[in-house]
Length: 79
Image 1 (cartoon, rainbow, N blue to C red):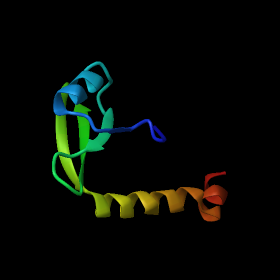
Image 2: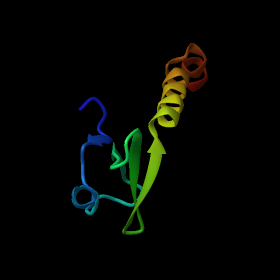
Image 3: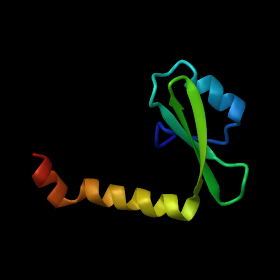
Image 4: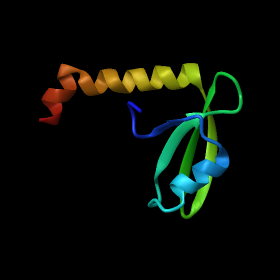
């Protein structure tokens, strides 16, 4: 997989298996059971919460973050 946080076609039970031994704040993104959606699964204080994300909104946010991180401005400010 290109991104370590994207697990693709993963059930809720499988998600529980992957996140159960991770530190609080760990997360993964997987395909949702609903068409055109993804699910963000987050482990916090030993509880896994699942949040549905609309693909078009997720892609817009992800694209903006990538643009920011790869911009010359960010590199100059970061250094």
